[in-house]
Image (cartoon, rainbow over all chains, first blue to last red; front, side, top):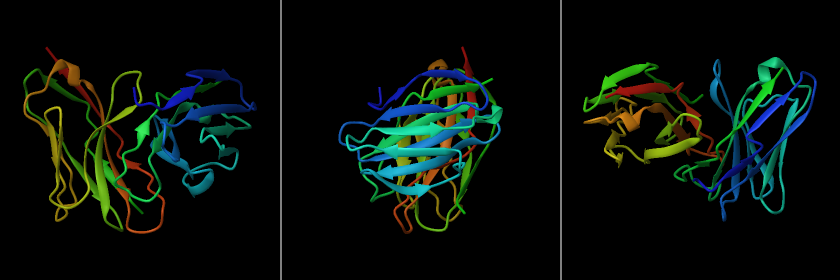
Length: 115
Length: 115
């Protein structure tokens, strides 16, 4: 158990809908990262938050957004869903955003299926 | 930009065989290098890491040496077990500047070990 929790574990929805994925980082970790894992694109970085502020963006679509709350949990919002958004979405956390040495601890993921 | 190339497999071995999974990288700064493992239905777990040239990371019988001259970080294990069956990801975190320490992943290598 990494200490990172993600809910829900599975999500099935229809095209055009909007969903929210939730992540709680390990106790004491200030950085939260979101990644998407799909068969064709592999594991891709979406966005990073550090202590409530957006730190970096990767290959995140404009239909997707995220935020980190004062209690440090994070939510990833996916809207106007398309079939191609079906994937595993992972959240990871680390101690801080000041070193690339810091290990990132991954949650179990949310499997999103868009029908 | 940063990139990681690893042998995609799948790799099928008999128990007690020697394992090598090749990984090479391209980075603009001075990356830290990681191997993550993903067991079926689970999130990613850090297997080992190395943060500077010539460092050797090791864990659970697995080893990898950070080779700056060949930009490589090959994963090895002398004697694999059935329980090592999983997908292995090589990754880098570039801390040459800025504050984004996202992980850039290879495409993953599926390892199956038969008894």
